Length: 136
Image (cartoon, rainbow, N blue to C red):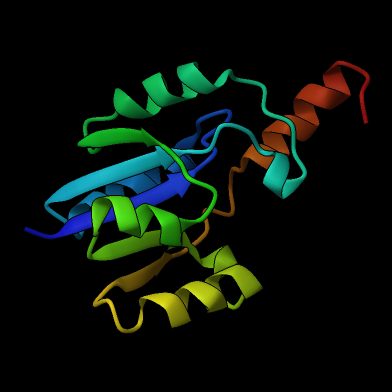
């Protein structure tokens, strides 16, 4: 059985999130999706409360298990021993994922980068909401 792992904040759930989860499930038998408790590590506030984001993600038919995300995906491997780590292509070449590529190379974990959905993002939605509320 191939176990896949995907982590994210999943705030303001949109088609890009769904595409990422669906594509991940196509490449594994069992998909674990970890939800970050906040967006602070990306310098962003979240609009949807943590428990609600977990419930939304868990309602997706492609998700087999929803978990609280540890700070690092490498820490999650110690818990779940997944075979594939899924992430958006916007993370390829970042310091964080360069570290992960090094960490996972002797563990038999494949890092799969999926194309970033250009048409919709939480950043775009957040900007529209903030503009409507008169925030910067």
